[in-house]
Image (cartoon, rainbow, N blue to C red; front, side, top):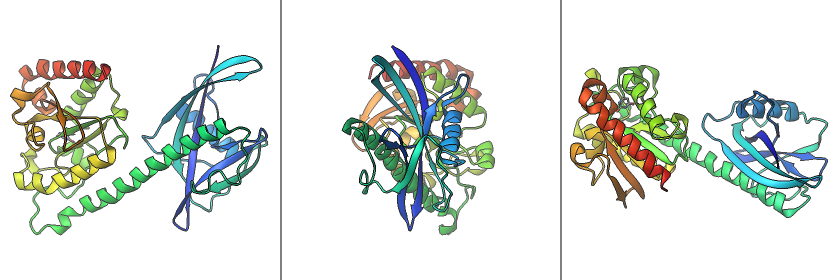
Length: 328
Ligand code: URA
């Protein structure tokens, strides 16, 4: 069997506040996103950008986390072909100039309500497969918009409170908005406050190692903290601060809908109902009705950086997590 690898970009723009997607119509009687073969030594991401430029004339900047890998088998000249296509998403301005390549006969900007009217499809199975790809992208874009609006509201919290003693720099969560695993720490540290990114300091380096130990990749995990503003002098956030921030975290998790929430340290565990004392409950998988997923607590990597005897415990918890995720 022949194996083929391709990559493409689902391009969208807003026309009078209505989200529309770019469909390129080809000579074979189909329509879909710009896509094509990944060259030898080329990444899927780079191939997707190159193909989009070649086929539509658009230089795009895809979302940092979205990637939809689609696999299917088809027959070409009597030979079975096992095909994998990686799709990214990118927003462009509605007034961009689309310049189609000679392998296309036209293009259309369509909302998914209009799909597939006005588009050619050689057969219904191709149409249905293309439909699924656009609909998954559309749901993800809804998540991006919800998270952006929520984070905007959260970032204004310092202005709305009469007394505020945390940093005013908001450190939003990072990672795919459809991640299977979310990791939640205590609060950003000084490095995180400066870079406005979670877990980029010493604890972050250890966390990266632990994520790999659990068989995961950092870019596939949603990472955030209970309190998303730096507490000066790296102090523990107060319970009042945690209570102020928790409703935002809950709403963020409602958007991501992870299957597993990993809680790092006592502060994170104690702010999530039912998790209690970390030294008693770490390394145990707990089903949560409230969050609609599994909770799994372990020590905070910052504690393991400071207290060496914590290192084997946290390492073991992440190794155990790998087994849990594998046995799904
Ligand atoms: N510790 C946390 O709990 N969160 C961060 O973002 C960084 C360090």
